[in-house]
Amino acid sequence: MLAPTLVVIGVFVVYPIVGTGYLSLTSWDGFSEIKKWVGLGNYTRLFRDPAFLNSLWVTVLYGAGVCVAGVVSGLGIAVLLNGAFRGRGVYRAVFFLPVVTSSIAAATVWRYVFGDTGVLDAVLRFLHLPAPNWLGDPSLALVSLVLLTAWKSLGLNVVLYLTALQTLPADVYEAAAVDGASRWQQLRRITVPLLAPMTFFVVIEGLITSFQSFDLVYALTGGGPLGGTETLGFLTYREAFRLSHFGYGAAVAYTAFALVLGVTLIQWRLGGRERWSS
Image (cartoon, rainbow, N blue to C red; front, top):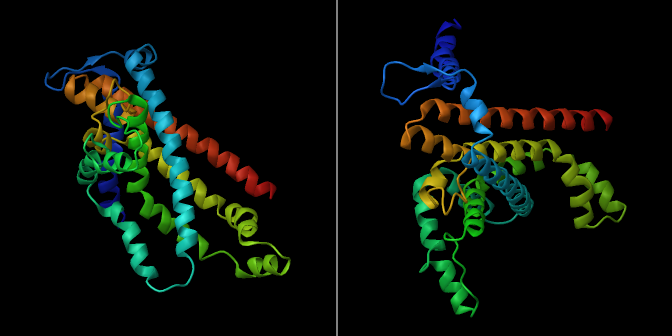
């Protein structure tokens, strides 16, 4: 009875992982019949490649920004939507719309928002404020990408936090209110600590999104300017499909996977110790 499921997992999960691992140990242009065996040559080349080191640094900054923005915005809006008020379901649906919106379509619209004649620059000029070159400056382009990614995943983070908020014990808040704790103190001393497991999950999701990000980068900045938004996911695409270095691109993808796995295991271990000690 398990055979159909095992076949699907083997064909669509195990085989691609093993196949990509083997490909990362070869030199292949994607067309020739022979894949030249290079062993760990692609991996030793990685840390001497300025493009990879730049992409790794960009991805770390990008991931940190996405995680911070995702936690703060998701938790803040979830706390606001957790109360009882008219039209709450409508607001929840509105915040979830970006999640189901096409990434390419969303990034294309945001290009007009950040463009030289975009909405954001028009608002700044109306307020007599300087309008920076959002997509032309490497640092600002990365900030723009972080904002787009945080907006795209906002609805999912809000739903996750709302689900967690509704499971928190009400008697803890009643006792805190009796002791004179303010709403801010309850949020800081009770809500945030109790939501630590969900925050851990949101952070992991943000890291995975950042290390795998390609479509948003491709549509918004194309990896530029000057490699300022070239994440590891985009570098994998560039090496494999633009430069026909499929073996090297596979090595970049496997390295990104190993980094995400390592960070996840470390956070899991630290989170488990904190829960055990508490």
